[in-house]
Length: 153
Image (cartoon, helix red, strand yellow):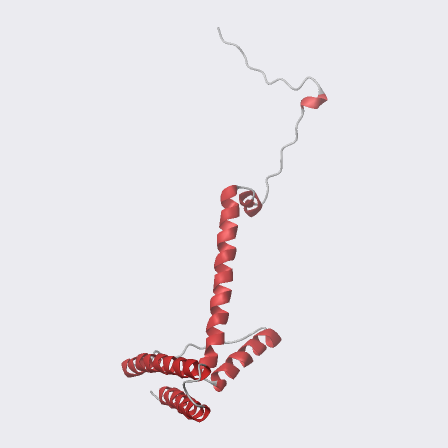
């Protein structure tokens, strides 16, 4: 015995429901716990990138006034014109890479010497005249190192 299945309409008007309109995919995703974690991860990566870019820019002050001023001018152009061209530097030669490594080690030693002479000066172990001479020599050595690195390649 076969029965005919008929689709029957609602008995009253209250049973009629309208179809829900689907949300935009990203809004729907953000409504979930995983979507919020994605949003947190992406915003965190962008923030870390922002901090790293500005840290590298601020470290340019150790390369000298010319490089730091170039970075400042780059930022000024970026804000004023909203267009800029980033040109990658050519890869450093093996000799320059080795020289930079040695210069960094020497700079670290100069920093340690400056720290020690400053501490001894504050403790009264080193006279003012000796302190000034040592400090001037350390500053000159640092400038010579920067100049030597700048003219390689």
